[in-house]
Amino acid sequence: MGGQLSFDEKVHVVIVGGGFGGIAAAQHLKSHGVPFILINPSDAFHHNVASLRASVQSGFAQQTFIPYKKTFGLNFLQGRVIRIDMTEQFVALDNGKEVIYSHLILCTGSDGPFPGKCNIVESYQKAIEKYEDIVKEIQAAESVLVIGGGATGVEMAAEIRTEYPDKKVILIHSHDTLADSELLPSVREEARRVLLEKGVELILGQKVSNLDELELNMTRKGRVVKTDKNEQFTVDLIICCAGNKISSDAYKSSLGGCLAQNGALKVNKHLQVEGFDNIYAVGDCANVNEPKMAYHAGLHAKVAVRNIINSLAGKALTSYNTGQPRDIVSPACPGSSPGPLPGGACPEHLSRETSRRHPKQMPEPPQLPPFDVEEQQLCSELLPGDRAPYPISKGAPRHPTKEAHFGRLYPGSYPFGHDPELMTIGNVTMLLAMGRDDGVGQFNGFKLPRFLVIKGKSESLLLWKSWREMGQKAPS
Image (cartoon, rainbow, N blue to C red; front, side, top):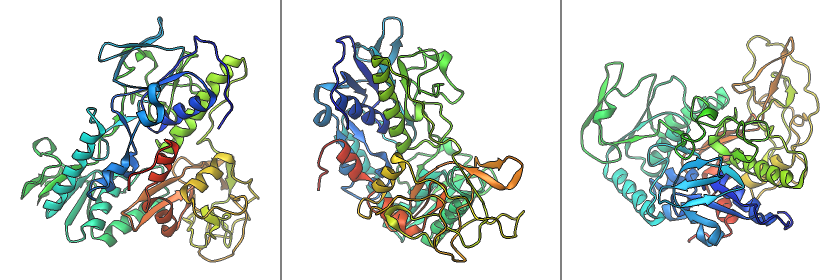
């Protein structure tokens, strides 16, 4: 991962927050021999990608918590940071302790309702018990309402119906379309179809109007739910999957002038917090215009650590560019398809959302460069058992077929120059695990066949990756 370097005794990096970005930063610092300490309110890393599966399967939650001490030893400190003193360069904890830093990496993540997020700080054993409790509540309920149709709500509803196909599951969402806006419209529509196939009842374009009167995560027979469209129905159990927000308590009183409207920290291209050359923001708390995903948090962490080392060595800093428009493709190229996807699979079933404005045949797309190292790594990590035997091309035509097309542009795309036939696309990858037996998603802007999402995420929920990165063995 990197050679051991020698550093001045005054160098001490403090990482605040032990989510995906925090553990990635800690591992990079550890591999380079940079003195650091990781501070987190709870005593274990939570692989919350699998939290919804842990809500429906008894005994599964223990696989989603990985103790920090076993990996980082004395480089881990349990506690909650409540203030940062930028003049004296220390962080203050809620237990009265103060920890001095030369460099600070803020990885505070985001917060939201249980079970999608878990903020129990006493011990991870207590958190596991809470997940076992919600499993019992779901088992006892005959009907369940899931509030919120973003990625978390979609996955939650699918998990319940997959594990308990006889239960009535209703999903209510304030918008007319499901899942996150970063996804291709065709992927969002496919998520809707999967939910309907599983028997989930959808109420779209409506909000729960009496939410404050309803107790969450507890089964009570026949509770009346009202909507803002004057509809009402009864359910036994209500689970909220909406309302996530940036966790800013650690820094908002100290770095108030650097906050974006959503509570994230404004950063420059090097991921340094604006106005500070020794404070970095990583993951959800960095105000970077891209989907908030574990993968991106890991990329942030790598850049932040590299820049700390470069600054100490007097070298130029690295810029973070992920999510920027990269390639030019034609949105409508009959008979063309992107190159092989993770596992070397031929993407004959990738679908394009054909342009209504330009129904005629479009020019062939230009040959595009192979994925870079980070993208190749993501391919391998999503499908570790089926690695592609040769570089993956983003645009090479391979197998002409009526159904094989480029995945059209996801939200955030825009016309390139004055030619409406050419557009730029970014590299958004997002997978939705819709139960252990189904899933939808896209890779680098290309819609994926459902079987690839199942293999890449739904079956394992990438748990193996976190246990591997923490250097521990998952419980059987």
